[in-house]
Length: 247
Image (cartoon, rainbow, N blue to C red; front, side, top):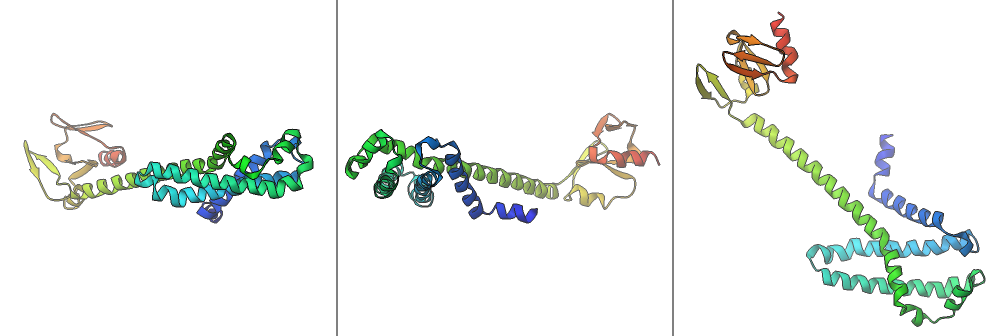
């Protein structure tokens, strides 16, 4: 199971599954009345997904690193529009030279009339161009959201690991303070190291406290009293404290 999970989380496999998912989504929501059969359906959306893949690759590998990440927003937008415009031209050329020839009989009257238009007319049909831009960019936006989520997750994990490491180091570097006969004394040991130097009369009741059992004046499940001083009993030390007093 772990091997399968590792295999499925490989970046290449995840990308393949993503594009298979995009293609499957388009096929499942397609209106079959507009197509002569599944071959035309698969070829039509195969062309669209192919253009989407090229768009995503150029944006993620070149445009975003070279422009958007360097705060060159205007250049990014201009280059993006130029690339989308040429991809739109490629899409039209493919439609004219393949689909409009092979599947013309399955077109409705509106599609047949549009199929008679020239390449230049279609390439300068701006409303169609901008609608195709949205279609071409949809997977890229989804991939950017996925990348942002993954980066945020990794950042939070690293921040948590950093905090744990810092707390661990701090725990071993702090100079504990000890209250002895109304005076506070500081020593250059961690609490764990200092406890190893003490005899059986001393008991750790909390990660921050060690007590001399001979000085205890009262004891409850949650704290120990030494005179008027209340010292908490930590959850992880409670059983050890109870065992000590049950001896």
